[in-house]
Length: 155
Image 1 (cartoon, rainbow, N blue to C red):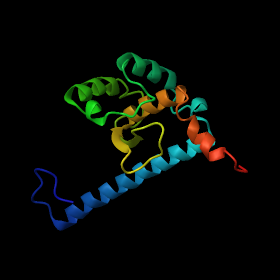
Image 2 (cartoon, rainbow, N blue to C red):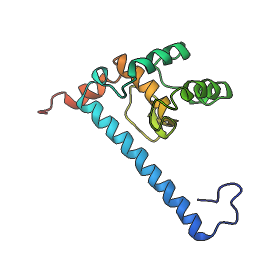
Image 3 (cartoon, rainbow, N blue to C red):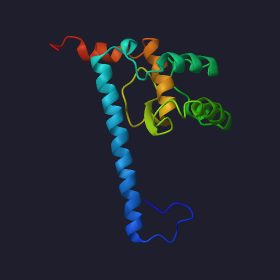
Image 4 (cartoon, rainbow, N blue to C red):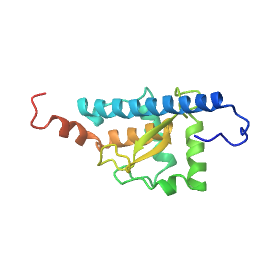
């Protein structure tokens, strides 16, 4: 990993600390992905609550992003365009004091019809994950994960 901009005078020990932090972050993100998918395999998404504020987040998301179709793959370019970033920032910032780690980075499946994959996963902040996954869950779009995990098995 190269030194962050402005920190060109870092010692090798400081460089290693940044790499360690990055590795720890990556491990936490992967654990979050695995945990969430494991939950979806055990509980239908339509019966799952991700936060105490699911109903509020869903209502606010539908109002702020009326054009968003949770059943379709996410267009990451639109989401991360100047206009998209501004719209999301306004949405996300309303949860600063309401949701723990509201702006912590995590991964989101771009397409609700697929599992996590290297190509089909995008980096988002936690409130984007919550808003989109709550919508997918409430609209029954994640129930396939449970059905696939429990079809024809002796679970």
